[in-house]
Length: 137
Image (cartoon, rainbow, N blue to C red; front, side):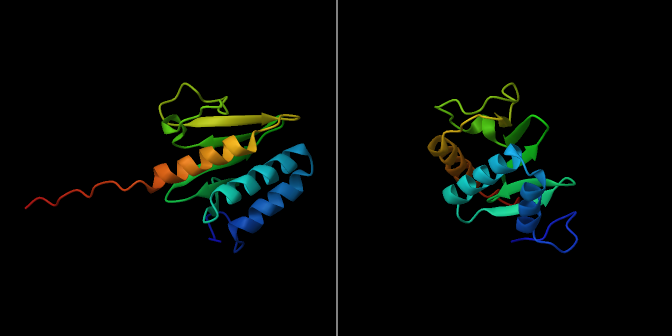
């Protein structure tokens, strides 16, 4: 795994594991479950650690971030507005032009198959080849 900013020599995967352990409550369990689903949906995903302590999952760019708050775990998809969400998992940041988020509160159950479908769609979107610009002669 890649070493990233704000990580004094530790791989991002270890920093994320430490965050999960340090939470020690339902938020840690939830973040661990969502991390596992991300890895199942996109086995080649790269875990990074950005912005002074935010777990980030990347594949040809950022797929989503995993932030923890007192009352929720928030998974923000950077290009979420461009993703199909037929089951309505996105329940936050719905007004923006780019991002969409999934806020998970204590006791919430997330549809694993629908979440993995969102991850796979985000991977496909990030992987879509953009035509190269021609150099001006």
